[in-house]
Length: 239
Image 1 (cartoon, rainbow, N blue to C red):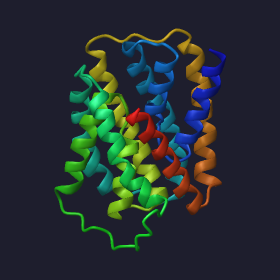
Image 2 (cartoon, helix red, strand yellow; image 1 turned 120 degrees about the vertical axis):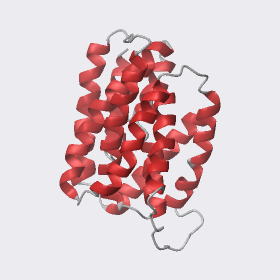
Image 3 (spheres, one colour; image 1 turned 180 degrees about the vertical axis):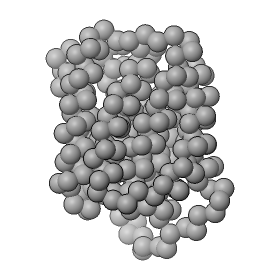
Image 4 (tube, one colour; image 1 turned 90 degrees about the vertical axis):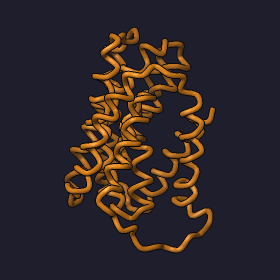
């Protein structure tokens, strides 16, 4: 329990520093420490809500927030996340697919293939809603907020810079996690033991991470921090 009390805030710090809530990390940690799946998903979503809210409040002050883009994503993502949260399916196949998909943005952010900078992809009216719908459903299904999927999409398509991506992703995660938690609650919510201790500690880590990510990290540092987060998430999904 002491080790978990150290690892959960560390995970929150790293994820919130790039505008994420950290649900994928909480899921793995709680599962490794023997908590039942019925306890893990609602706990991860609730922590996601708290940490992503902190991230949004800190990153929102550092950039101009693209409201139109965000609304195009979230209006379709919230109902899809709710629907996904009502399903209780085997997550192994989904995690492996997500882990493989994340390898593309990871290689891009680490400049493994030394790709030249390209112009932003023209955003047609249906593109953002389609991405929001797909990411929202998968997020609700596996119990995450969707930030690790949305962030690379925004960056690779050139629709937002790093600070804007962090702000969009954190608010996206916050609202999706609420929707997913409500969907999960239809079958009843069960919380892990000692969660009343883990919750404030993890939130404290999120506060620290959000502050340093928004005010201390340079753009290159944020780029590699995001790549590191995505690499960890990819490995966790594949394993």
